[in-house]
Image 1: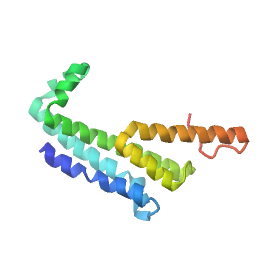
Image 2: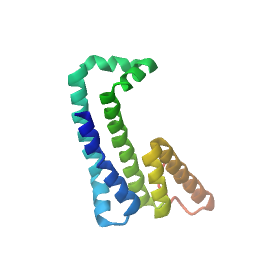
Image 3: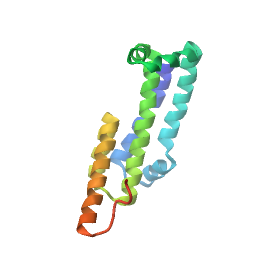
Image 4: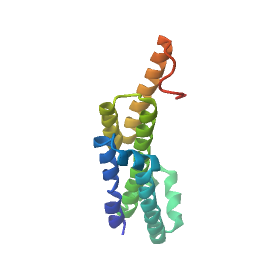
Length: 155
């Protein structure tokens, strides 16, 4: 069942494709505003967690307390696929956050936003951190230039 859920969760690629390749399209902006893809992937995740817990029981959560326990958990293919869906939902939510924030504050030009979204898709926290650093640097630069704060409050 988790393989089926994994394949369904690949719908996230549609959301990423829209944000990266068609960021100005009204449908993309509407889906991003509704947070449609992260919500859908999160629902798939809930089904997957229920399936894994019905197979393993709640005792499986005790293994999260040590590195060895996590490694053992991830050796289970069903758990590994559910973890991938978990990460996919969160990475997508971060991508939506970058998209929405940049739409509001014009931190970077759209082509740079697309590159940062690809970075977020591939390496979640690195994409987020890069966007955040650029956003803070732009804010600091605007403050030093006395031009106000075009990027809004980040701290």
